[in-house]
Image 1 (cartoon, rainbow, N blue to C red):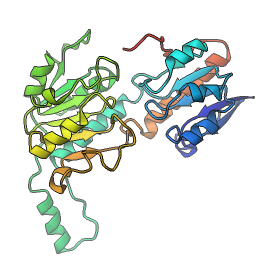
Image 2 (tube, rainbow, N blue to C red):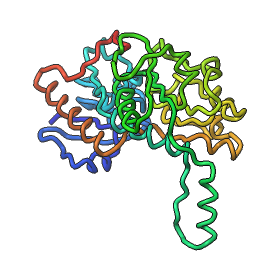
Image 3 (cartoon, rainbow, N blue to C red):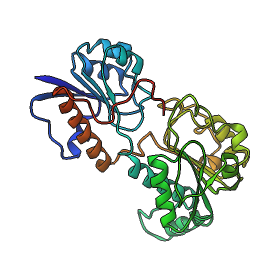
Image 4 (cartoon, rainbow, N blue to C red):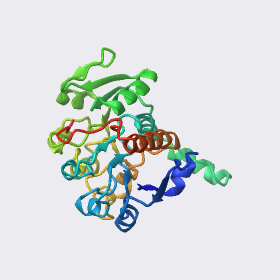
Length: 322
């Protein structure tokens, strides 16, 4: 019986309602805990891993010398040593677009929470009631222009959601991206004119630190910047400095250059009044039960394909950095 190293907590797999595929043994372990990942992958025939969490590197691959597939359960693939996989003739597959609806809905949720934080009532009574009303004095509506930088699956899903609210959505205009319903602007113009800026770029050599301090200086002082693509694309130190100086209205980050972020990260050391202008999540925007069910189902189907001698769906080419 072949073994699948499933680098996710077992309870998350079970929560989707999926079952172990017949004919395979599944071992579960967390990708972000190296000791667990190594124990789970030792002797495995197939490695299923989150995108952007934990490394599928030479050391890990050496523990699974007979591995026949590295399957990423998301759209990213920057945590895999694809050169080594190619040398070993191990196909690497990913799942573009499967998480996009969940990420887009999170973007909308975070934009609303930054613009209008709402205090929940828990205990009742006059004091809590008045405090909750006072907390909402500065709440604002979501309005103005939404600028999308990175018009792939996430960017397109986000544009559709924000347009559904009657908002004007524009996109940065690089490459071959095209959509007649979403006008294209040069990146600098988009940053200068947008009220909410969504960054949903993939991590490649060309996108590293593309939103740097000079780009942040172009943004409106009231603008909100949301990074939900990959870490390392936006200069986090420059964003923290802009928040602290009042040069930026707010920021939401789900991805970071280094994960997990340290307690000394500049976002976490902002003064209390400024800290409220930053909404941070632990790379979970795409992690709903719905998206995981889609991802896990296709991933397990790819295991079956490879076991039958077929190519997996969404197989990556080694030199494909798009």
